[in-house]
Image 1 (cartoon, rainbow, N blue to C red):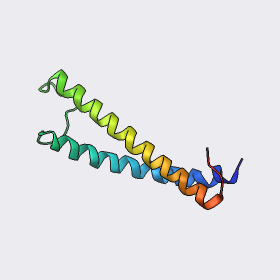
Image 2 (cartoon, helix red, strand yellow; image 1 turned 180 degrees about the horizontal axis):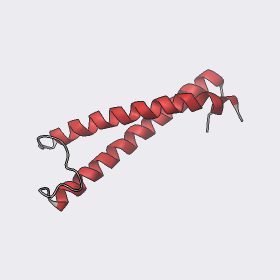
Image 3 (cartoon, rainbow, N blue to C red; image 1 turned 180 degrees about the vertical axis):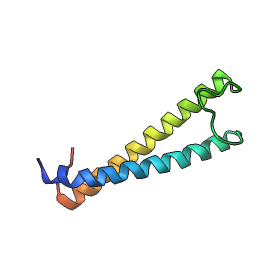
Length: 88
């Protein structure tokens, strides 16, 4: 196994946890910015409409995917700078 892959394992785990927290914060802010008060609806919340549930899920998924991709890419770039090889 390449040294860059070994070096990236603990970095990737830490970045994954961090990206989840950052994405959660970003989603809550985006949900509020869309004019919704309180937390996003749970899929089993009977008082919420289908549209509100699905829009919330789509927004949350998009934000999580973008944040994860950005953080993973930044981590891989950092490992390349440290080791000289790409960890992928």
